Image (tube, rainbow, N blue to C red; front, side):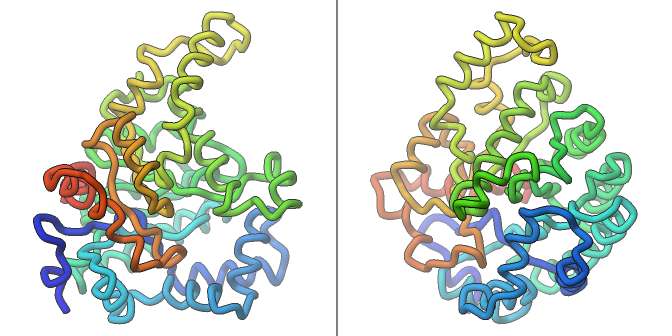
Length: 349
């Protein structure tokens, strides 16, 4: 079955946060777990489960992360997905030393480019980069875009507890802005300094910890002045904006109050409000949130042109969730924005 045969009337379905993994990376994860060489409780919790469990969920996900051929295409066809925007699964290369991370990112991008060449109408690639070396990350993003045809970068939230609000990482922002491609900030398990209350309650992963960490990451970027320095930079986040749209009124109010109070030396005035940055510099996908009220709220807050469909394959793979926004009172043109044209715009498809 072809992608055209699965298209909904009037629009394609482009899934914008879909995971994959190289066998090499998963083997490095296995070795690190066995030898206890990555001292990160979030990594151990997440990948200790997926690589150690024999449960149907874990085995299916590990199989499908590595499967880039006909089984994945079949899953897309039977759920009506025309294209997947592919990104190296979390934490990607961001748990390794800089040298290993830079090399692994380049190798994974070469491999992903091959998969895209094999299925050019079905797959779109996002480049993995290694924030451990920001200058090399910027170079790899440029190589990925100019030579491999990638449509942006994926960064799996923090890198060993460090976040992109630190100007030392801003070579990556400069490269993305110059190349006119977005950065997708995908969740990671909270870092050591944050994770313990989540971990002891089983709340460290996708149920809550991912969103807390990634939402804070985006908020930190907005308050850092990064969008004043790089006004054309576009950031994409999933899971209905990692809850920030629902908090936005209070976040904006308290940010202004905190700046005016001069309580924190590092919190400087920004040129625009948090509302402005969310509406001008951020795109949101609904990955993992197949729930019309939440999606429609995000559309109302940040704009119909900035909210997109995502499945979160293979971690969340439910066929009945795909058509959620086709079953609500939404015009055909707005459905097309959600499923197709917003993605085409931000990713330059």
